[in-house]
Every structure is written in C-alpha cells, then in structure tokens.
Figure 1: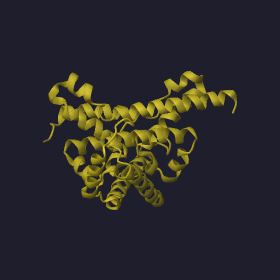
Figure 2 (figure 1 turned 180 degrees about the vertical axis):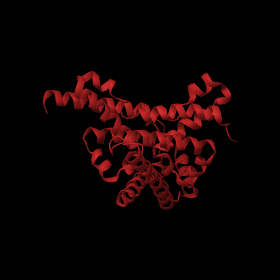
Figure 3 (figure 1 turned 90 degrees about the vertical axis):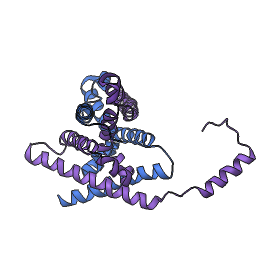
Figure 4 (figure 1 turned 135 degrees about the horizontal axis):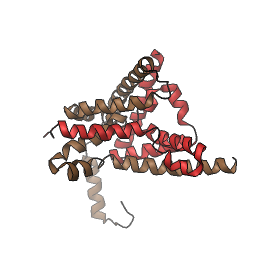
Length: 118
Length: 156
C-alpha cells in the first residue's frame, strides 16, 4: 500500500512535469496542453497502453487529465462490445460521467455560494 | 503563426534583441514545483480511492468515479476560498494537469460570471475554459473507439 502511494506520487508528478515542459519549453497555453493530454490519453487507451500504468501507479495515472481521454475510449469500447457501432456514442461518458457531473453540480453550487474575488 | 507573415530584416533584428532581454523562465525550478504539487494531488487521490475501497465496497476499478467526484469537490472548496489560485501560481502544470485543475477551470468560470446572471453568465460561461478539453477528448475518443470497433468487427 505504501508502495502505491510512492508510485502515485512519482508517476503523477512526472506527468505534471511533462505538462510544465509543454508550458515552458514548447510555449503552449494551458488549454492547448490539456487538450493535447486528453488526445494522447485517448490514443494510448485505444492501444490498451494506459491501463497497465493505472494498475502500476493507481491515482498517479487516474488523477492527471490524461486518464480522461483513456476513460472516454474505455467507456465507448465497453458499450460497443455489447451493442456494436452505436455503442461508441452511447458509451462515451459511461466512466467519465462522475467527473463531468461533479464539475457541473459543484460549479453551480460554487456560483451560488461564493462571490468572485478581486 | 501562419506561414504568410513575412518579417523584414529590421523586425528580425528586433526579435533577436527582444530574445536577448527576455527573462528566461526557470524551467528546472518550475518542473520541480510541478512534480511536487502534482505528486501531492495524486497522493491525495490515492488516499481517497483507498477510503472508498475499504469503507464503501468499491474495487480498484470502480473507485475511480467517486474519487474523481471527491477531487472535484475539493477543487470547489479550494477555488471558492481563493486557495487554488495560489497553488496554481506555485505549482504551474502541477495544479492544472490533475483533475482538480479541470474542476477549478469549470468552478472558477462559474463563480466569475455570476454577476452576468445565472443563465447568460454562469450557464453559458461554465465550460469556457474546460470546453476544449471535453471537445478534443470526446472527438479523439470517438475516432479511436470507432476505428477499434471496426477493426475488431472485421476480425483483427
């Protein structure tokens, strides 16, 4: 269990370092970097290359936004195995719905409760 | 930058001069900070997923959903109390890449635009920053999953 925390820290940290290098060296904006990350995650997911990293590093692989692309592909594939091509659309948010729903619900609660700063 | 903008020699010389005086970004220092902050977010995420596995009968595979939702909730608290901005200034990509950064993008846009009203302000601006992540994530996942499904159908 301690090893899992260690690898979560190291792998998660390294993914963020890649992001920082894209900010500083490639001079990409955060929006471009994060978009690139989800696309990379989707491609890695398509080749089943992201799941081994999740098994190895746990939250170190699932917390960075790269896993969003991977989960979208996995959700789409889960449904398409059951229902064929149409499953690609119906299953898209099967796994990621918690992140999107939480962002919408908590975003609205935030707007109700908090005042803009500065 | 498109290929059609031509620069004159004087502009080139200016660019060179500007480059010489531009403050260099401390890349190594920024990377260390990003590593530290991003790593800590992942440790918190790991602790939350163990919490769901041991107390709520989730498995390693299914714990991802509630963990993500909890991380976004933490992002709500940190964004609302103005703490996430400070983490962002220190951690750079370390605060943007984890899912809390996605939550922060949505939540801060929602809070910021509430003065314009709930429908035209909050509703239409909520995904102003995070929308591109969803668009490119969904579209690339669609293409990847479509190709993979057809490939599996043909019998690869």
